[in-house]
Image 1 (cartoon, rainbow, N blue to C red):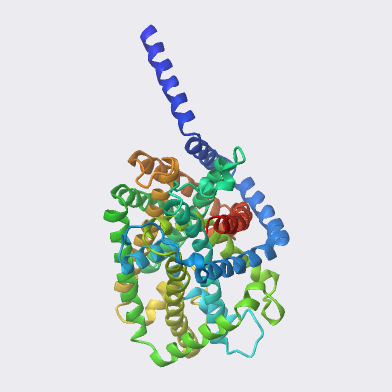
Image 2 (image 1 turned 135 degrees about the horizontal axis):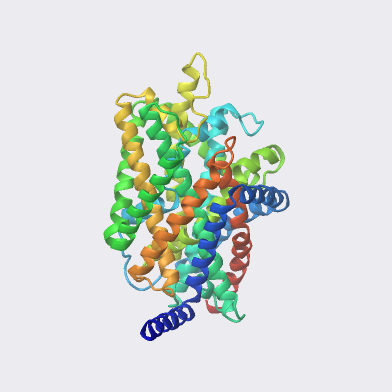
Length: 507
């Protein structure tokens, strides 16, 4: 009996030492676990809370989100074309070739989202033009889709890639955001608070993607099996599968796991794009691509500030733009850190322009092909009954108009799984870096722990999304993300100012 007490005392003492050594990790883990238990126990009350809070935030801070998005784009362009753009992120040559680099940043940054919205979003904009302009419906639909998936989204990612890349490879600091700028270290508790906020925001954004992605996969399975979609236990099982596969990939590391899956995703995505492209009106799709891209660039300032004829109204902004900006902000910490991690050896100019332009143009072409083809299908229907309105099944319905539809749809489901795994394994790796005091090669025990925590929290969020039959998980995620990303939006604005001070002081 005495020996058992001694063993328990030793274990308790060892745990206390471990907590004191790594308070950031244990604080974040406790908060997330508490949140999960609370959501499981009081699902309806929590949903009501986020519903009220999100409405208040959108009313008060909606314009702030728009201004911040435009500011991030302009900030990055000024840095890229200034003398600071020549600063190299480290002295070694790039670790990854350009194709692998683009594949990894695109897979981590957009991933399954381009499959989720490939048809539904352009088709919705085509049916319900957000603006009253002289532009044809197909062009305004694509232009607005480009706006929501283009430069601003990647600017949010690029901002944090810049902060971390500079800290890691120029200042020779660790990867923790809270210590990335010297001004942050001067105030006691601020670095730890920023790192904690970064971890929580990362998790909020990631579980939203897991919830939406697994619900779409379930929608594809239901479509193929001709059964009713929305089976909760299937979604929960898919969440477990995604987190399990992501753990194995993150456990293997960047070079062996994440890089290989990212490259596979890009090759499969290009194959799907070509499959649709060669069977549609190529000339018409290219015309729409170039025209909508040109209008997007020339209208960019008005779109970004929702001014004059380019104000789609508060309801549209609430349902679409504010939600998207909150989503990109929530993904900015881990995506930015991951981009910085794989950009070693490149100049700041190359990293910024690569992040802003290449993925954006890829997204524009993607939405032009799928959107333009869906416009053509809708116009050739005798009666369009909203076949493409369901965000979770629209792409599977879309492929019913092509040969080998069942085979292609099975491939889409597998690609969705692969994209989700890439996003989750990237996040597990980055979260493990934070938990291991900024180590670029974090201990594998942290990768396991974060995989388990993400699994628990994601299951809780999926259950939250099913609390009201009249709403779907997308509605729950919109509300949750707008709340979760607001503190990080303010942090983004503050860090841009501090970063300018840092550059002017040292260069």
